Structure formats: C-alpha cells, structure tokens
Image 1 (cartoon, helix red, strand yellow):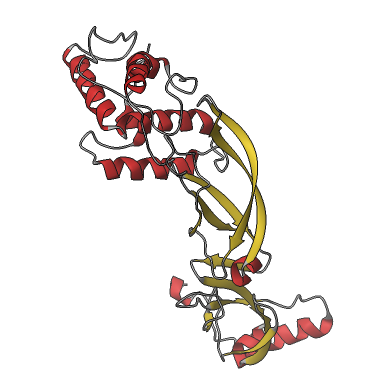
Image 2: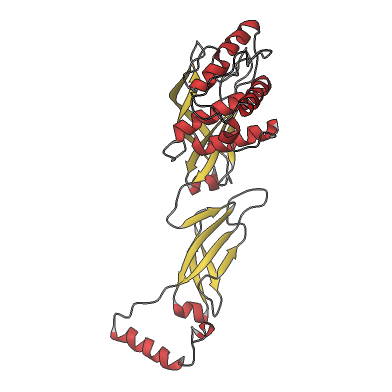
Length: 320
C-alpha cells in the first residue's frame, strides 16, 4: 500500500490554513473536473484531489494524518509497502462530510480506506453529522451574442451525486441557466442549491459555472473589451479614410482611419464592448491589406508608387 502525501496532491505546504486548503481544492477542481478538463488523467487526479480535500479539510482527520505522517517520517521513508502503525488513530473521532456516506470508499485509495474507514464508521455511529453540501464547479461556453445581450440556455452536465444509501454516483442532468448581459470570460454564474446535497437536513451547496466565450469569426473577448481586426487598403492607411465596420451588438458604424495609419494600430470605440458598471470598449486592430498585382493596371500603379517613394526604406531600423 502506498503512503499518500495529501499536501503534495493539493500543491500546498503543511502549514497551509483551512482557507488555503479550500482555495487550492477549488483551483484544482476547476482544472481536473471531468466535465471540463481535457487532461488525460482528469478522473484519476480528481479522485486524488477529492481524497486530499476530504482529509485536510476536516480538522480531526488532518490532525490524525499529520500525527501519522510524523510517525512515518521518524520510521523512515513512507514509500513502498506502507502499513499503518498499530493504534495510530487512538484518540481521534471522525465524521463523514456531505460528499459520501459513512461506509462507502469506492472512490478512495486503499491508503484512505485503511486509515479512515473504520474510524469514520465508528464516528458516524456516535453522532448525527450536519453540514451544508459542497459547492460544485463546471464550465459553460456561450456565444458572444449571449454575453452581450443575455440569454436563457439549457446545459447538460455530468455531475456526481449520492444515492439513498449515501453512495457516490455519476449522472447527467439538464439545467436552465440565465445568462446576464455583460457576463465576461472567467466570471462565475451561481446556481443556488445545485451543488452536492446537504448532510443531516442541511441545505445543498451551489453550482458555479465558469463562463467561456466561444470562438467567433470576427471578434475575440478579453475581460469586457472586444477586439476585431480591421483590414484597410494601403491608400486608406496612407491618406486616411472613412470605412464601415460591423459591431458586435449588431448594426454598422462609420469609423475614421487616420492618415499614415500603421498595421497594428488600435482604434477605440468607447462603450462598444460588453455591458457592465464600466462597459468595455471595442478595439479595431488595423491590418494593411495589399491589393494583388494581378493586372497590368495594378502592377503599373505599384511601379509608379515605387518610383515616387524610392527614398522610403522600411528596414532602416534594422541598420540595412
């Protein structure tokens, strides 16, 4: 049996506070939850993370685990065929959290079951444990139009629940989600009471949906700002021009391209991004689009331009 280093599993130090344990768990859960993760070992890592949180998030379990780790350290490396010392859990009493029933350890390692299985059953028999259900996290990908205007959508998630006996199980469930106008990437939509069931009659936890914006052929979103590439001709860039631009909210606006515009220059349309207390902006990134020299007339125009601007050296800053 392998000794489990729960602190390493959560990426925290042994001195970590309870709040640091919770934050580390939430961060890793968002990365490895099977609903949203593309990591090849997501389910295995999620089981390890859940197990580490179950132990380090419970004061009694953590105290006994630390005591065991100290005894193991004094006796040498915990690697290899580890067996718990006799009487290691003397003086400790455990209870189940809201995630699983007291007798079920199907999702836990042999190490956990050996350490806490019997102790938990004894503790569960001696007290009626009450606790609010755990919060769950998932991701939702929405269209930029939904982020701009708000919408109501149905989503299907693969969620872990518990059956009547308290055993964990996976099931698909469909939820109706109201998307508020102005929601931006990385923001969370909270669905109250849609997390894990409570224990001992306490309320269920909440479900937090992390917003992601689906790729769009014209726009990309950063926080509340929206970016778009605006192609202009060399003539429009050099001489300045009025050009028409489609906006994410619908409709077309006329934009002034300044004289001597350069590729990569940003034009800002204030307040044309995502809604909010401080609305985002729409940024137009200038891109010089060269007409193809596919006719005598265009080739002649390029040759005339080359002669007229023969003193211009675009590589002067390179020292050549």
